[in-house]
Amino acid sequence: MKEALLEKVVVNMGAGAEPEQMKKCAQVMQLITGRKPVKTTTQAKIPDWGLRPGLEIGLKVTLRGEPAMEFLKRALAAKGGKISEKSFDNNGNFAFGIREHINLPGIKYDPKIGIVGFDVAVALKKKGYRVKYRKLKKSLVGKKHRVKKEEAIEFAKKMGVEVA
Image (cartoon, rainbow, N blue to C red; front, side):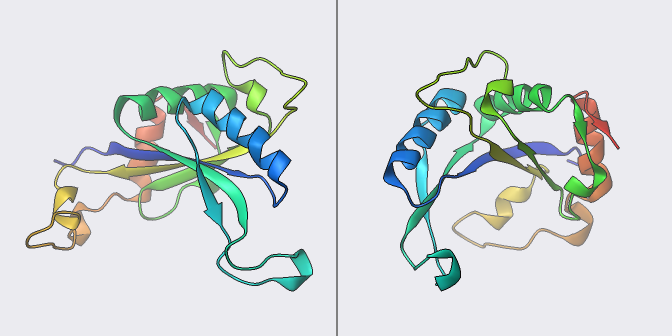
């Protein structure tokens, strides 16, 4: 019950407000994850940046289970097997960015698409986290049972990642 497990991997990509760039980024997301991406919209109005609520500016894909573990291994290989300790938070999550999607193993350069980067966010859990999501008698996860920063670092080290 105390072992940290992979809950989900979220792949995010900021595409901007241009529809053509959004299509290219959607192709890349489909290529690297094998899933159809979901468009993300802005919530706040920032006139200096030309943002208004409801404007589609990004894409995301959530992976769980075996596909999430396979993608995480590929993404860590693209990162060179090194993650900064600053990438880990106190709740058992960590995130890192990849500057070029062609760094992933098995992905080739396409001149029509170009090169885009993306972010990978990893959430960890322990057995028993179901109480947080169930429909009846929903409950909080106890403080002693939450994933801590040290446990998340140990999980990453088991995957062969060097934490610096």
